[in-house]
Structures are given as C-alpha cells and as structure tokens.
Amino acid sequence: MLGATASRAGGLLGSITNGCQYGGFTQPFAPWGDESSYVLAPGGSFEGSSPWTLAGGAQVVSGNEPFYLNSSSDSHSLLIPAGGSATSTPICLGILDPTLRFVGKSSDGSSVHVDVYASGVLGLVKLPDAVNIGLSSTWAPSAIQVLTLQNVLALTNLGATSIVLRFTPTGSASVQMDDVYVDPIWHE
Image (cartoon, rainbow, N blue to C red; front, side, top):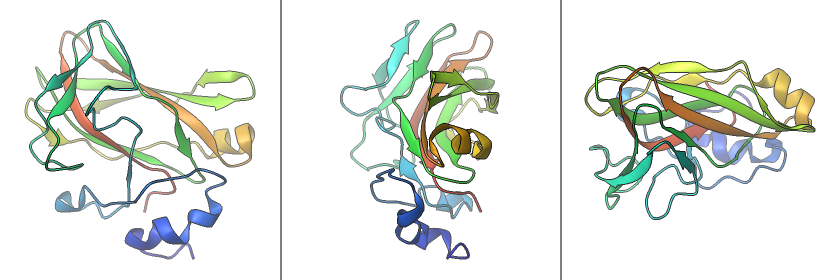
C-alpha cells in the first residue's frame, strides 16, 4: 500500500490517518513538478472571514495569488507586515513526515519564518522544526517544507496530532501569502 502513487494516496491511506478527516486531496503544485497530494489547510485560502489568529497588523486583503490554486473564483490573500504574525487553526496530521507548501511573496524577496506547535498531553508545545522559507518579490510557490514530526506524533497521540503554524516575516519585509496546503500523510 505504501508504494501507491501520490494521486491515489488520499484514498488508500485514509484507514491509517488515525482519526484525521481530510477533504479532497488535490495536486495543486503539479505544474511545478510536485506530484504530491495535498489538502488545503483550514482557512488557508483566506476567502471570507479567516479563522486564523492575526496580530501586528496582519490582515486578509483583496488580491489573490495569480495561479488560483484553490479556485478560479478566489479573490483574497493574507498580508503580514513586518512585526506581524498569522497563526493557523489546528491542522490534524496523520503519520510519517507531512509537508507544507503555499504561494507567497515578500516585499524585498526575503523569507517568512514558520514556527510549528503541536498539541499534546500538556497543550501546545513549540517544536524545534522552525524554518525560514525563502520567498521572491513576485508570487511563486514556496519550496516544499518537510515537517519531520514522527517522534512527536508517536509521543503525543499515538500517531496523530494537531499542529499549529505561526508565520512571521523576517527583517523589515512584509509578506503576502495564499493557498496554504499540507500533505498530511507523507512526502515522496
């Protein structure tokens, strides 16, 4: 079963996601050679009112990423000014190494810093998986970010947990991002 192609992974691995319920898997980054199957993070399209926690001037603004990965009718994205932050709602993850990917840009072509928190027996715990994801000054898909959470998942909830992602611009740049996706099962 683990040798299945990514396009079939969502259906085949549903029985081993340890209670996580996912919507339809898609391959939004296929035009860039990424055949992994992803699900949109809760509120990750930034259409309508965002369930994310926004601080320091972060806000949902008019203007979508130009590739319309989520929907051709989307019309909003997230703007995080320097000193601001955006924190996702909990994202349920199954087993193995999940991945994160989104479309974004930075006012000066710098990075966005991502902290990862996991839900466990003691509440939210900041994980050592923090990373700076490089962005350009024009809209582009981010690099694939593997979240090596196997040991955390095994210790928290026997193979499944919820994570929370906190995005902050680095330096004095502002960051605009849209269509935040996770491959919650594995990365090939």
